[in-house]
Image (cartoon, rainbow, N blue to C red; front, top):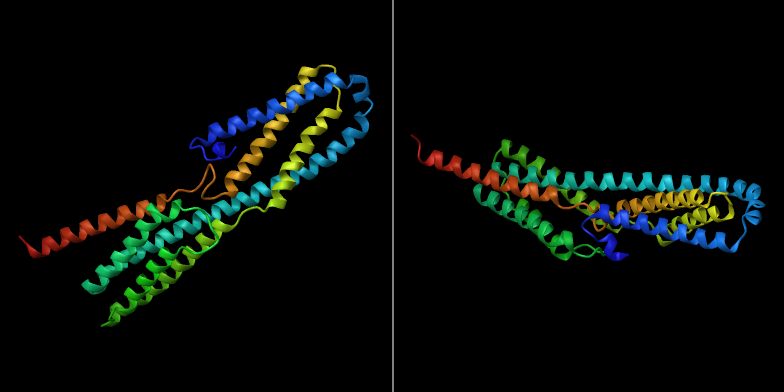
Length: 275
């Protein structure tokens, strides 16, 4: 099961899970029908139908709420990552208004941080503690701003804006860390999985004259619920699940860094060699 969740093709993984769950419950239904007569099952229709409607409503509410909640959290994490990337890009760009020595130091540390996130930190196992190396690089970034000598009012404005963006960058980084630790607990997953099994198992208390029709309905219900649970898993594991967020935003920021450095070199060359 772990291999399915970690498969690069999450569509294939979901199809395999849906097919397995549908086939499993259809097989169990067939075994039940062979051991229990249809007349015995029909005697349970009134009570089973009433109970099934209650359980179905309760489980659909819980599952629907969980899907919506997981989707909202997933979207919030994406926004947090984009904010962190935006702040890094702004800091790198705004550093051009500082003296050359400070500018080079700030940009070097910002590039070091993005390189570390893209190449190392993003792929590390999720653990409930801050990354030591990431924290050290952020300290270097703070120190590089502390060393800036604000010489005029214009530079003071850019420095103030940069410190504000640096605070937002730090907040976004911490939010990303904390989001990677936040998952549905074991109790909630037990409720979802056991509730889904109970809901499908209620199909065994009914006896339709056409067993193929009943097997089809059971398979569709089992497949649908298993896909919903797979969706919850994918949304709940924001960074490591089958639909885990990749560091695309940070990779694009590195591309911007390279482009701005090239533009700066061209501009410097133009000033040194005017026509």
